[in-house]
Image 1 (cartoon, rainbow, N blue to C red):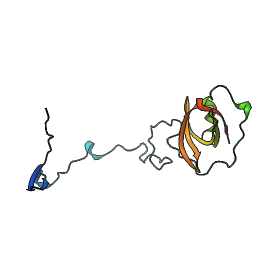
Image 2: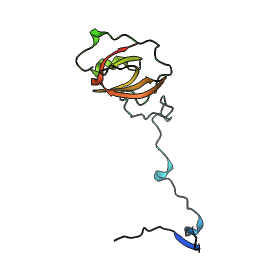
Image 3: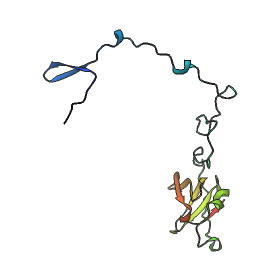
Length: 158
């Protein structure tokens, strides 16, 4: 069974071709003042001041955990080095790269070689247990990028 939807307004037919919505008056046409919940006074921030602003200009939440630092940091303001490092065959392993070994490369220009043979400049901002994320240099600009560490053949920090 189909029921037409209920609309809390009245439709007055002005002419057969035109409908006009007429809202019923509420309380004499004025909106009453509603006091804010809790008396209108917010508890002050510890120390009586606003939280410090983060890198993006937004106030940082005092209790927010800093997980890898990836959310608060943007791409580098400069391009990566103009050279391409040589892949050192002695540093290439048959095993996946351990994400902990990439931790010293956080917020540093890093050249990454993937298992598929591609290489690129990378600026890591997050190192997880099995993944990394940050900014990859593509076509003369930084773009956000993340991958599993098992796709990385080798890397080199600058």
